[in-house]
Image (cartoon, rainbow, N blue to C red; front, side, top):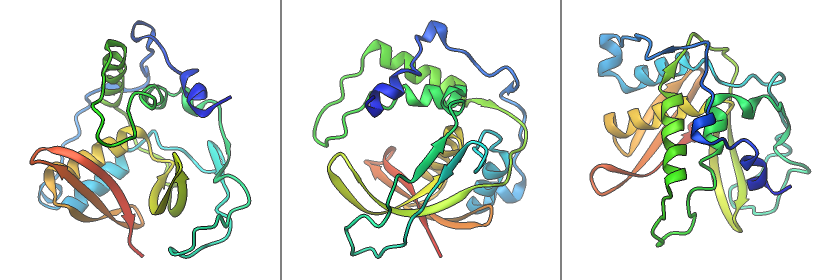
Length: 214
């Protein structure tokens, strides 16, 4: 089955969308004075609040293979990065609503997006789900720098936060975009990363992504 077909198996009509029952909507989480004045401390607080992240060995397993250099283009890994993913993961509400969005966008630059009413409903369902909050998370997470090919294009080196929840990444990039600059050097748990934010004009996100700092 093609990857997009696999994602589509988790699509639900907006009227059938199921929301998490074990969380409180818009729970009261007040930032401290330090967090309001220090972007890194605010990002660390978001990290602590991510209850919905995945646990290595319980929810997924990865195989990093051999290390490689930035200038080398050959694949140094014998198999896939993810060797196993629990079927229950993509049925979690924020993960399933996120998967519904993955075939909604044109990856090619220079083309106007055509947004259907169904896609608008899927976006609304995702935003509704990630606005819910919960308790405190497991501490296990991994930051990886990888080289990979996507849609026929080789991505030189990219950093991925393995196991974090969709709602955490949305909150992290939104905070850094509106509260930071193009380069935002922050600490997430034990990891130091630079959250790069590129703008389209003054108030639109071109792209936002992490860069590992070792």
